Image: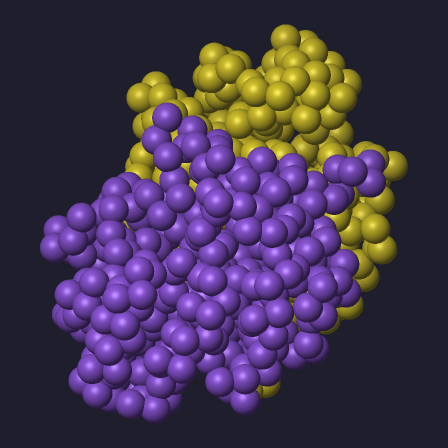
Length: 299
Length: 299
């Protein structure tokens, strides 16, 4: 059977969107449950300035509290050398860098032009590699930008190649505002895999308009075998508060298993993790497998 | 541009799952709004015995109250000759017959074996065609049965062919409990389109596990150009109360337009219809485009 790697981003990309601070203990329990369900790659937090994202100010405590089995890779976002220092001090073996394919989103998000972001990330990547860490890269707004609308393929290609040249082992291509449909996925990912081996690309889809899993299926057709997702479908879209967030890990795993892909994840234990964080947050999450699973249990 | 036909089933497949009776006036307004958004095929109600589905006991009133532009085809489910009589008396030009691909679901739903259902539907079809009505057919549980689990392709083929031989112009292949993934869609629909021209088949997907639009994309690959969907994602799964229902018309139209298919539907007016019925029902519906659209409006 063909294998698919899932990068669980709920504790970071998901929880950073929550208004109410989630207690450290709940985050630790959540991550432990995700690992118990069989996930081998978990983005646990972000070492950005706590003033930017107060929800993730507890990154050190979370990383100190979770079980850290040797076969699971935990990672965290780092925007700069200070973040990298904190990540390394927390014993992480992987960090993730991020930037955008569109100029205005990069400017608003990182406060720098794309051109000026390269040397900063280059320095962080070099230092991380020197420390023996693995470095992942995120490219945002590959399929559309909240400020500019459509984003030329050439922009994504340029940023992807720059990250790869810095030594990142994998670039995650993000549909940050969830506008893609399978047609764009075929076109853009189809073009990018011609430059880069599929092993070095991942798909990061948001389900803002319901097309998330359809986009995964299209990306599978193009050879991608690594996808980011979020337990329960946690997360959202800062440009449309209330809209749906990342694709749900439960729904992704359901679809992949139905298509005979091996993920190593136990779907039942995974929905227990989803049910746990749903109860913690006190509102219904968007994962449909979670809903169906809880509905079946009450029958 | 390639055209896709959408059969809006919200007023029937959607509303029949609502516990609280929706007032006739609201149903009429909903259907008028759906038509105003550009939908050309609307399943308005069901002429089953009102004791079975009290929510749709007002079929005649609904059909009397709605605007009936000449270029829009309204239809309704009919289980028997009595239903057909009522449908014809309401001035409908199209009716829909239904049965299952799996024996136990057919038995529980229609109270007859598959074999014994054929002559009943045959009689209804003959009479409808004599009256000059167009007859549509539904096959339920094509991708899985709540009692039997997986359903052999051969069952769906047999029932589909039987319906076509009765003179139905189109068979809608239903993933009644929303278990399909793109792999099964490619396999089953890929096989059925070899027997039957794609023009005579439609896809009817439920989003119980989040794979609905991914399944539509797979069915488009197989040549299907007609899909059933439900405004707001109304509807549910009687076997998993609380689970998601039909694929949402808003999400379907968003994806199709993004893939350069022509639907004739104005997405903005469509979300107005979704917002209307969401407000009527007083709870958040599952359409993600609806959520994103309302979220953007409040920003």
